[in-house]
Image (cartoon, rainbow, N blue to C red; front, side, top):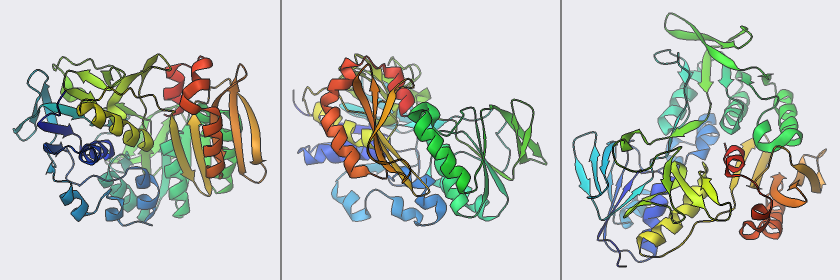
Length: 406
């Protein structure tokens, strides 16, 4: 198979840029276009909830590449114009401005959009955090003072709570779990995170769901819990996860089910591929469809997609990985951490808040977690999770992998 003359990447995201860069590294010299719905050049999202929100970084520092590096890519960037339709047979994308972009191969990298509460639209002081503009808007509201309530006790919610508290903001973290990230990390580590947040002054109101918002004069004043208690709030962040940005693919003929469904080569149709948060592909070693939302996956999957666009026949079989930074805790998670796993600390000390833990099921290692021990956790990952050998043998389901990376 010869390389396509024209490649269109829909999504000027980290995954989209990584795909374009991988194509050029592999010698692709055809026409290359990146289409993005935001006006910004590609930027990194993990710093938004930490360095950008906290003010340690200027917004420009989150840009993935300098202007001259993007220019050297010899790609056309069409920014601030969202994709609204895809004709698969002709590989033609229509945009919100009325433009039509055609290519011989199309890579879908549109990512996800945040979930919202039904009553938050039009209510001032309520934020989600997905884009650079979201981070800057939230930071402005936090600097104005008042009480923040974070709705959502997963990775993003806990990171926002930690960053805001470090800014001196009064913070309440609300969610249905008994401790932050309990479903992702299990009771031992989530309990340590709860102690960390409480010790830093975060008010944890966990174990009760959120049913809605309360407002006066068009601005939020509180968050209503399932037991009818109202948590006072001047600012609210809704961090309830995200859903794949696939609405624009209605009528395309592609299979869309919790993402763009692909084969093991990340191919959704002839000449159409998906990469990053929006891709739900068949993971051969887990023998199930899988979708991962993290920065590492975006980069690693992009390399495989670029190879396949160029005519290779590569299957994508990664070991799932994500990380989170909260206060002085830096956690790295490799593999899968099932809710019923046995957890053993094999290096360091829980008391010292510096340790590596192995997660076992039926005697097999399924995951590795490092708390302030990044290098050591990578070594254990290499030792125990090479090519998903142990994951495949432990009958971990794809649903558990997705939950672990939520």
